[in-house]
Length: 64
Image (cartoon, rainbow, N blue to C red; front, side):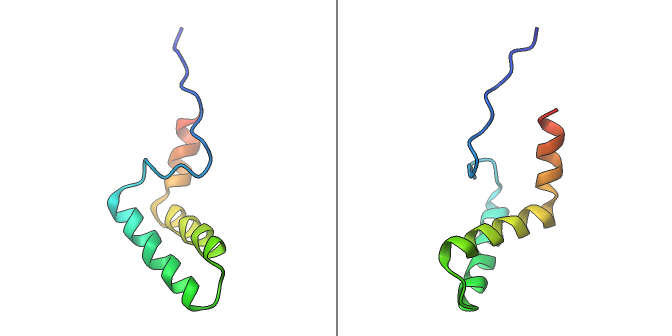
């Protein structure tokens, strides 16, 4: 029987690449310049990175 790993905590960014981290930081800065709060800007930035990189689809497949 295969031992299952516990699910990662929501918001854990440790598995993202350096490129994805840089992209999220840049996108977040842009949202903040538009007047969004920092927390909202960060959430939207990571959502954008996930959409662009397909990370959400890969994570969903890995969880099966």
